[in-house]
Image 1 (tube, rainbow, N blue to C red):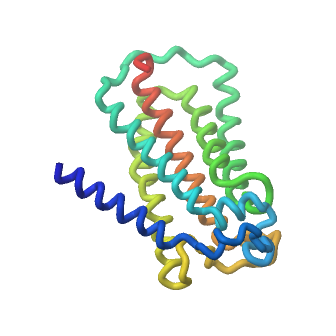
Image 2 (cartoon, one colour):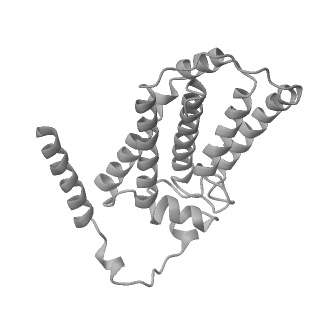
Length: 227
């Protein structure tokens, strides 16, 4: 009961903080007079909206995704792992998967770094990277997948991503007066760092989505046949 009351108080304080930080001057004026190239520097206006003007929405999407992955990992611990052997992969998979992995790796990194310039960004980059891992999992033994997953410690590292983003928000508030403000230098539009913090935030999001998809993949392989 005590924990429940503390949780309610913290939840109330959180929403009260959001309420007092609402920019009423913008809400009263629906005609947003913005110039993306001058204010943000991104050629991709969707990226400017997702990673700058509406980053509150993006942050909560990341938070919900992270909590979902943590929940999957927690509840799957109550099921016994399946130790049955995999069927042997076909010749096509053995040839295709090693070729697919480096291609998806390069495409995912490129998509992350240029998501503010062209269609792309952190979310679909994470899925692309996760697809590369899936292609390798199709030809690996369960023991090898488990060893890679445990040694990478990606399940623990991905939980830190929302904390990094919160630190980014607090720095913006303390030194620039707003949470989630894009305070990074903005270079010439069209360059890699023209979007200010876009590359950093896209990298955070890509790693979070990649880590989440990797965690789900590992749990489903570990408990195959039970789901």
